[in-house]
Image (tube, rainbow, N blue to C red; front, side, top):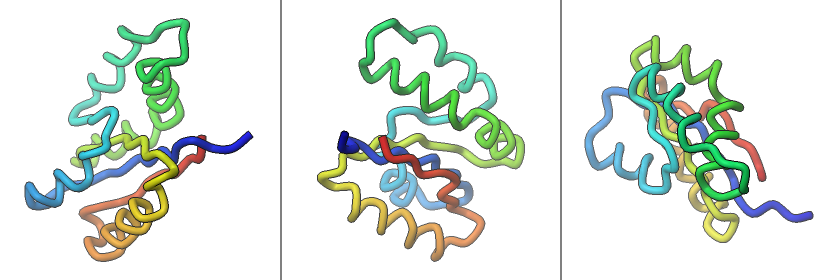
Length: 111
């Protein structure tokens, strides 16, 4: 079975608005506060649509996300189709390196 998406958990703080837009333009969920991690369960369903995938992603990343929100970061979960995945992955990794502690690629999962 081939993978369809690359899912990223990105943490960021103290970045310009244009950089934040780059980070969140393919975001399926943004997390600004701890309550955002709990609200996801409201729209989980039995099917396997985007809402269901978001619930799964939040569950995968919950512990790391909680800690980073407590540390003052905003987070974005990005679901990037493989057709653009390599270039987006390269960009995110480059931002992670360039912005040091202000942009962190916390987790990458192939699904």
